[in-house]
Length: 111
Image 1 (cartoon, one colour):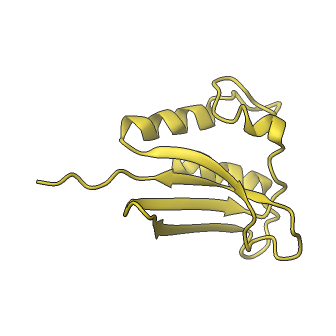
Image 2: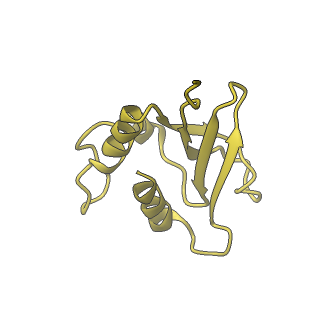
């Protein structure tokens, strides 16, 4: 699932140093999150609403299964994959909102 997200980031990022970023953080629920973002063009709202649908693609070479399968793999492993659309510091020269894919991992099971 992460390979698919990184492949998409490489495809759409500028290729300059720092154009793709990954970071881990702990959210308010004490769950680990992996954030994957790039400096490529944002995903239009019409496309965002279909991101995780099977067979939906904007690429002539795509099958439309990559993000769908990545999300299903996450769900089957007690994790969540989503796309957050907001302002972030990667696009320092623009005030345009950007997005990032976030994998929210499950809490460790307690004995």
